[in-house]
Image: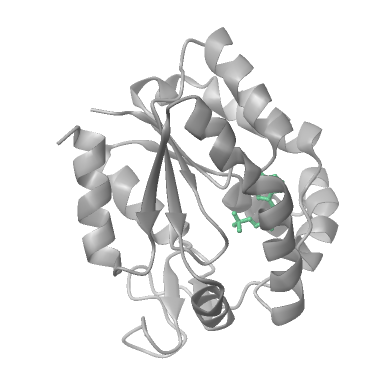
Length: 217
Ligand code: AMP
């Protein structure tokens, strides 16, 4: 089984949804830098205060900060059985730092999963996205409605719209994706680690395909 995994793709491609299902299916540690920053913002820590200004306008948090929190998290004992990185790396500098960290702690990356999707679909998904404030479960106002409006099916928490899920911030995020993150696909292709998937095929089918890959089928 492949156990140290990177999940990549533009905002709205379905990374978060697949990540949640895969970590629970394969008992992996979910490392989402976006979730870590949002948690820090909620708790109003100094990291959160610093990150908020970048995140709310759709910009990337500086590399040294992001690399620092991932390095600390990956070194924890619970990652020894496998982890899934969701939203990291997003720049070449982050990918190079990750390679070095992986060597230092003997936890190299086994596979890089790239989920792609066309821009119109990304905009549709992001603008209708709602997220549970407590557990982070994702919903959509048209295609993934909760049973009771505004309430999470799983934990009963309130649903909200992320501050960076608006049209202006999304344009900025897609720009960063195209300029800084997409070049990573070539980087990982050269390392022989990249596997591409179509994010528009439907969540369940995609999950089955990703599961087969992870199980080496
Ligand atoms: P996400 O939940 O992955 O869409 O991330 C939300 C926001 O957190 C991004 O738009 C960035 O502002 C910030 N962020 C998350 N991961 C990273 C990263 N690897 N590098 C820099 N900024 C990040």
